[in-house]
Amino acid sequence: MPTRVRLAEIIEALSRALDLTEGQPAGHCIACCYIGTAIGAKLGMSGEELRDLYYTLMLKDLGCSSNAARIASLFDADDISFKRNFKLVDGSLSQVMRFLAKNTAANAGPIRRMKRLVNAMRQSGEATVEIIRTRCENGAAIARQMRFSPAVGAGIHDLDEHFDGGGHPLGKKGEDIHIFARIALLAQVVEVFFRDAGPEAALREVVKRSKTWFDPRVVEAFCDVAGRRAFWQQLASDDLEAIVLSQEPGEQAIMADEDYLDDIAAGFARVIDAKSPFTSGHSQRVADFADMIGDQMGFTDMRRRKLRRAALLHDIGKLGVSNSVLDKNGPLSPEEWGTMRRHAEFSEKILSHVAAFAEMAIIGGSHHERLDGKGYPRGLKGAEINLDTRIVSTADVFDALTADRPYRAAMSTDDAMTILWRDAGLALDPACISALERGLQQSQ
Ligand SMILES: [Fe+2]
Ligand SMILES: [Fe+2]
View 1 (tube, rainbow, N blue to C red):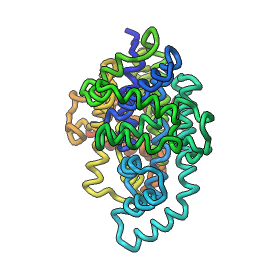
View 2: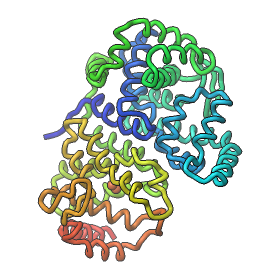
View 3: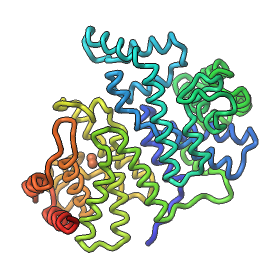
View 4: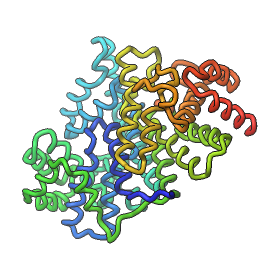
């Protein structure tokens, strides 16, 4: 049966992965969508325009994984908590300095800490622009790949510009900043401060930053919206996700067909692969190898298509793992291993938010299980691991061995196949290894 799923339902689920990357609780982007869409409606937007704003808000952090590795290395920090804490800084020099002093190399000894801090402060001007530019440009490009309009791309691109010209990466001013971005930036600050300290704190912060960070016209619209008690009640409600889903603007909900689902998965795979320089292209290659195995096994086109998508998204949970762990040049401590292993659980959780993604959620959650029961997270055994998952696991291990890693150089195909065969029947399914071997030979 061909799949047709509501686009808003998929984007809501994927926005939770963006929340993880930004160190925000799941639902941050959804709440921003609720706040910003209410402001857009107040400003007189409707139909297509309001719908574009709705998706901009949910996908505002689409480029956020692209700068995670740079933040982790420049500030010698856990990028996730660094990003979370930075959202509460108001941008004044004194606050930024205090923030950097507290969050740079927080786990290092005093001498190394001081050196890193001096280095970070020396580089931070240029580096900030570069970090934000990467994020904005990648986010906008991925939105286009996922078929969103140029307006959505422009809104994501301008997210960190400030009304007075003091933002980044271009220092745009006033109405040169896309209106979606002016709304999204305000919505983001409201959400973070509301969650931290309630409605008054959020309002105070908005008024304080009017004309500097925020467009006064957007501030005024927000103040109107904020005067309604029901607005805050819904924002705090456990049903917010369903409320936002039910409020999708436009006459009819957008549905994603098979072709569109392929584009969404491919676009989001770029978000996943951008997280670490060492996993660049990993999801895409795992999808290619999994497809090769599916082809050798005589799968139908539809099954191969679904397998490809699952392979593209299998590591989506890695967006929730800090780059200080993902990119570590050396053995991981038991605690770091625990963090790394949690990515499978995160993948399952994110994908299971979309009912039509149930099979993908199983694969995402169990691609590190082993036939002998020594895998994770559940220690499943043999027949408890389905064939499609075994295929993705085989493709995953093969790619991990043949790509560069922080701790070793890439291995040759022959050496990698030797290792795969050593694990046959223990970790991996021999039928999958054999199919991969045949596929690789035919592709030469
Ligand atoms: Fe994985
Ligand atoms: Fe993987």
